[in-house]
Length: 92
Image (cartoon, rainbow, N blue to C red; front, side, top):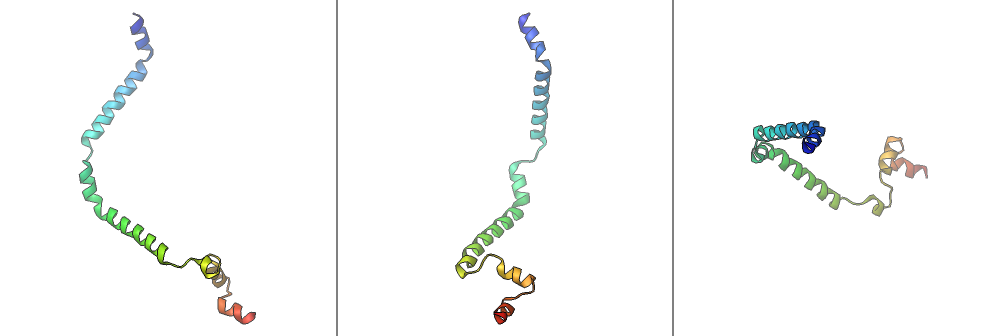
């Protein structure tokens, strides 16, 4: 009697867990297999990996702006502001 009273206290929790587990098992049953998904998206995975490798390679081989003695983006800001580097050197 005591056990059934405690069980009734948690009846909504038990129903929720049972419903959720049935829903989860149904989703796992109808979901495609992992290899099917991998075979469908392999061109996307490969192209993304190649892009990331290209970014890493360009990051390694491009000169660092601080090593060249200029602040990052300063040349672009001067150009956009209408003061290219050649014009600045003529004014000085």
